[in-house]
Amino acid sequence: MPKALLFVCLGNICRSPSAEAVMNAVIRKAGDENKFSCDSAGIIGHHEGERADSRMRAHAARRSYDLTSISRQFKYQTDFDKFDLIIGMDDQNISDLQSQARSKADLKKIVKMTDYCSKFTHYNTVPDPYYGGEAGFELVLDLLEDACEGLLNDLNGKL
Ligand code: 4NP
Image (tube, protein in one colour):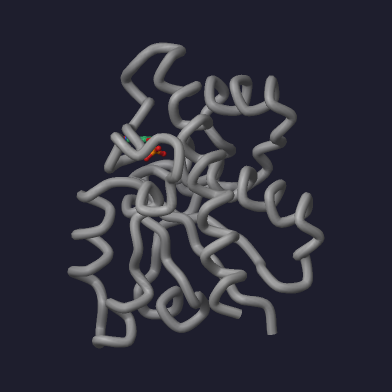
C-alpha cells in the first residue's frame, strides 16, 4: 500500500493544491510513484468544488506544475483513517487539525510543511498568499519546492 499524504491549508485553493502538485512532481522525479499518493483539503469548505485560485495556477504553471485538484473540506471522520500523514501549512492549520483529532494516533499524523525545509529554514509557516501580491505566490512555491524535497527524503529514510 502506498503511503497516503494529505496536504491541508485554510481554503484548499492556493497552498495545499500547490503542495499536492509539487509533491507529485518530486515523487515522479524520484521514480517513487508506487510508494506515495497525494491529496489535499481545506480547513474550511467555503471553496468546495472550485478549481485552485487562478493566480496560484498561473504562478505554478510557470514552473510547469498543473494544479488539477478540486477544493474540498477536511473531514476528520474519514481523513484521519485514510491518510498516513497530514501536513498543515501554518500554525493555525495545525491547531485546527489537532482540535479535530480523535486519538493520540490521529495527533501523531499531523506535521507542519516548513519543518521539512532545508534552504528556507527561517520560515516556520507557508504564508497565506490569498490577499497579497505576486511575490506571495512565488514564495509559496519556493517554500513548497524546498519542503517537498525534504519531506520525500524524510519519508524514504523511514521506509
Ligand atoms: P489557501 O488560501 O488556504 O492557501 O487556499 C486561502 C484561500 C481562501 C481563503 C483563505 C485562504 N478564504 O478565506 O476564502
